[in-house]
Length: 208
Length: 269
Image (cartoon, rainbow over all chains, first blue to last red):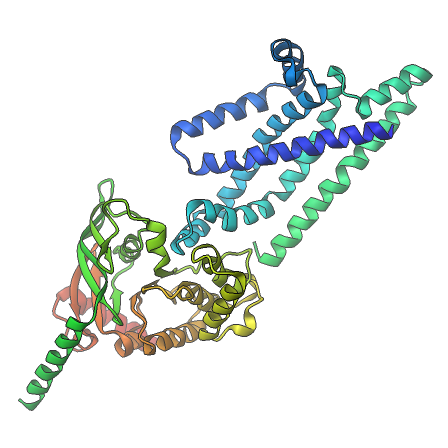
């Protein structure tokens, strides 16, 4: 069971980080770039927010994996990849809301000092974007932990897969699922709540 | 008669001085339009080393837009801006480098909420001038000292009063030793009892010979420090002259009316 917990956590955290690495630039692209680029980003977000992750995983693993087996026939990779892109689309929305909430003023003040746009984003916008995004990021992480359970369908040995083995082995259809439910709660809420509390405390301190 | 001669003499001395000093910032035939709305209409002005010029006029007349165009925070529609003779509006000028030499103080202060006072002042020193950490810190502390806030260096903007925040804003603008500081109504968003400390800070800067272009309606302050006052209305310069001209006998009818209203308001306060 412990290896299952470890796999579930790995898929969730890696896809969260992938989502962060892609979602943050996407959010700033939508906020500051030209119309055609914005439309492209919007299209990406619509696809990954609209199509169920189970469909995406199956499509990449069995469909695209048939033609590009490396790396898509690696179930762990494909699960993380699909969840990561879905998360990027979600996180981009979360960050965009934060950018809007912060407003143009901080950017203008940064540019007035002679900072380039990139430096302004890195030193002035991003730290504040994170503070504004914490409740959303917390629920996004919880969502990823839960949705990582789809990965067992394409053969990732995560918590879900091991739960299923135990059920098959013992014939008990209640205890393994209750145990899994309990473990999923244990993996989601402490981190989500911690993020939320940190964000609120920071907001209060900075008067935001 | 004697007074007349004296004035002439003063003017002559002024002319010699002006010839010797450099023009720090200049704009020629500057226009800014938003669709059909004209915000700035054919404005030309020149600020020399050590000059303090004060722009005033009714709200919505385009004073803030003019300042933003001069700092190239908003690109002008037509006309040119020069910083020490270098044209900022044509060719491929590195505007970030130009802005690094122009200090800007905002009406609504706009400090960086997530950084303490020191962090606010330090940011440009670190990431624009690329000074090493220690040197940046030292310079930032020096700037905070100039606005008498060194003890507040580690407080966040939310923990400071409005007047203190604006003084940090001034320190942030002056830490890089810019060629000129543009101030957009630095006291008008503050409670009346907090304007004094900001005015005192500006007075200190004036004494040190800082080149400044200030939008303000603090009339006693203007009279005291301004070399020249510029009355601005409907996007254009209506009248220019020494403070005394405006306080005793403005030439244009519009300036006359505006001054009368301002002086009445100041008396009430």
